[in-house]
Length: 604
Image (cartoon, rainbow, N blue to C red; front, side):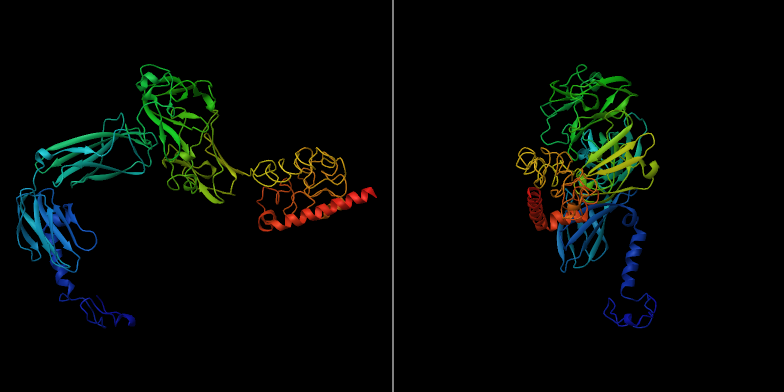
């Protein structure tokens, strides 16, 4: 527009092929100005083109014609727009909104056209051009074709920014308004209005607790003012529809079914109370987490229940997830009541007993949630099995890394707590190694979250050398089952100079229970030490490589110092066992030599 002071711009080429030059470029005679002015005037004189509802009529894949109609809600006259970005003219057949109408051009060189009785008409759009036509009569009413159906099964699942749509008469203009309310409420809250034949809006339910029962309503008004309406219910975070969320779910109780037999069954629609085979008291599988959930409308009162598997009392769980345990009791104020059941811990809780607590964070996807920071993901459901107000969640499935996390109530961000139990506070941070057990503990009274990472890879744990699966661990030589293991001469310290990894019938290597295993005699075996205390036993002959548990060469049995015997977390310990496996062989050879020397010395 203005003269440029950038030298490199001066040689640029304008859209009309002329050089940019050094002068100003604002001119009503410039190539684009008349075109922009013409289109601006058309929009200004035709409200439907700027504010009317847009109904898509035709679209080609790739380059080609895109056509739509714009209709002002007051005048209800169709304005048909067709654009062509292909390098050649295109002729298309489409169905307009005004059957039998004649369309005259408002923009472009297109000749007038007339729509057939079914609304079809043919347009030819020039290459890289456009055409705008207007009908000579109002859009047609839906007539007998008018209908509406919400695209949502009763009891269907909604979450996050949920799309709510409806099916109405095709190729007809209509205004469809959507609204919602919580179950039990009277007033409706508007969500929005769509003005095409594929109406859809979005409802953000992220702040509503999981299990909330919602009623939706859609009302559609056609060009003649006739109305049709439809309603449906949905549940936040759970699919309680007739089709359910699981493949092959017939709604019948089978050997995999989870039901809630109790004194609330009649209120749930069962023939009587304490019926483990009642389908009306059945929970649904949440496919994302493998846990079960269900929401029921239960009157106010005091109730007791259990969890039954397979529709009978053969397998049932009570308080704390105990098989055949005590009845679980609760008091409910009346209305929707949501239950959650974990098939691993067998703990079941409901919203009357306490809040639904989860751990949204940067580790959610790693635990199997669809994405990170999901307060509604049941994979991180925290449970209070003993009812002491401390909710816990443990996992050993997190890969090595650093993470952030918060505690969310009700499966949404509406109530969440961060560091120091502060509402909407800062994220907690923690780090873990591969295979560590991370335990989250949350105090409901103080909102304080404690995070502890423990390493299961200690001696006898079955996960690292010295853990029950390697030499010196109870299953190989020197483990209590082979020579040098406490069952043969020279294997439990009966003869000085124990074999590598020797101990007392598979006890901790270097446990101090026999000579040669706790450093009681010179020439201790590799890995010997006093139950993981100071590396080696402190005697003069204990200074050879590999003679102390958890030394910084990575020898020992995994029962020594914190730095090197923590299950392989120390960098030097990992070097010894993973990067330089030959070092272990060398150590064993040296140890055998030390042992033979000790025996020879004693025999002398």
